[in-house]
Length: 382
Image (cartoon, rainbow, N blue to C red; front, side, top):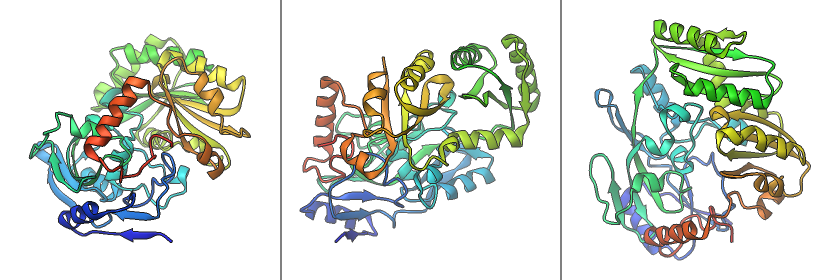
């Protein structure tokens, strides 16, 4: 039987953690439970009461919110002020079968970023600070407003992408940026993977200031431009001329709809029985990696981040395609995002770290969570 504890204050949270005698599954709104390795515990530490906007200063481009504040509420507030989370957090609810896009804390804990990452940076680059309780029951606050960083670590970057294995975050401070006035997307068709990756690289290296570049085999290659309207038009025309190919153009509404779908992995929504992988590699290697995998697996794929992010949907492999996918990577890493329970029980969601990095990760974990209370095994399968 699962036991759930849901403290209402940081003091109560700290007391519960300090008194804990068994591992705890950290849970926000519960929409990212399928990510990472399964956690073997029957005790859930729910942070559902740590929600709400604490501070929003549009003129200072800073927002602080409770960790379980719904992401949809934050984005709605920001849009009213013409602002956004520039790392373009994805909504994986349709891919994972969860009821909503989840919370700010879930996005930060899993380190999720969308198509604009190649231009604006990853989620960790936009987290300025946070409040949390460590595995020893100590309250900490680090970042933009009050700094308590006695460990010597960059705490915000460590917490982002830690999958709740270091600390129970209660509030998060993020940097926000102005929304672009408009956007357009250049559409190139009938390109094979190698040609598409090469043209995306050319576009990213051009003065056009492309904010996103993606390719879905058999459909199209897309290049997004954002900013004030005259600038977008001028950069678009120069880039089309530079690429030297016939191109279509998507206006603002169609462009926004397209990139929301790519951000949320819409091409794989209908592939419910497939294992889904998120592969990060050097952009110039993307087409070669996809070809090597396709030669040995029944898999669909598409590219984001100008070829640096390869999404894969694999059918019919007992290990979800792990052995082929990970052995095909010259550099980078492959993360299992979704798979049947039998596969998740056998296959680690994350690739093993090199020994030196693994040793450092162990020291960081021991510094924050010396009793290994928080989400044990979620990142390193036992």
